Amino acid sequence: MNVVVTGGAGFIGSHLCDRFLAEGHAVVCVDNLITGSEANIAHLRSHPQFRLISHDITKPLELEGTVHRILHFASPASPIDYLKLPIQTLKVGSLGTLNALGIAKAKNARFLLASTSEVYGDPQVHPQVESYWGHVNPIGPRGVYDEAKRFAEAMTMAYYRAHGVQTRIVRIFNTYGPRMRAQDGRAIPAFLTQALAGEPLTAFGSGNQTRSFCYIDDLIEGIMRLIESDYHDPVNLGNPGEYTILQLAKRIIDLTRSTSQVEFRPLPQDDPKQRCPDITVARQTFGWQPQVDLDTGLQRTIDWFRQQRPVSTRR
Image (cartoon, one colour):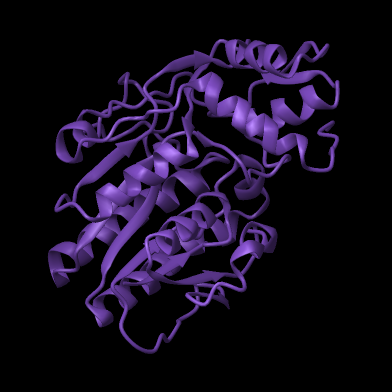
């Protein structure tokens, strides 16, 4: 197949490029590198089936030839990024999704939208099921990301209903693994970098808020199964194992054999208290569930981070 991945130089996007190429498909990576990195795809640049197009998907894009699959992963995805780039985040969720769907319609390609657990906001239903409509503050600082993804989902479903585009929507819960940026603001890369540098691990609030953590290989497998399924409603992909942020910090300190301690900072506005997926739909629809336990995934990620140049995360 000919596959287009927008945001293909990002953390998840680059792993998707790897997977499609490994299965023998041709991949076009579309990325303006605003938050993605050429380092994530450097090993692919000489691959005969891989092509990078440096382009902002919020602007129209003409592609020649046949396209079979489009996976729309272009967007700032970490709090640091979307708080720094609020307009760009809103534009890629709206105009970027519109343009990517337009290509899918013109090429008769199957389309997958990378949505997020953030569409549930600070949830009042736990664990979160796909039928839950969410509890989101549209004018809060996190609203630029939350509402961009909610709009993108609405646009995707509109193209499915009005134009018959074969669409898929994945709601991605916290995912981690190699190629995460040390300073992207998310807990695991921040804690790992701090622990390896012997710095205090900065936890927000009391540290009792919960998250679930899915290893990147498991997420990629779920995405591959979803896009080849016949299911068009949103699907949660994440690991239903639930941990407090404090438990995560202590586990990372143990695994890195660090002498670091945990420091507490004020909780950011609208930070969700609980976040955990109900993955019944994914399990029943295409037989997916995570295979990599937290300690195994963390150790693989620690090994990758040890190979990178140490970067201080003090802020």
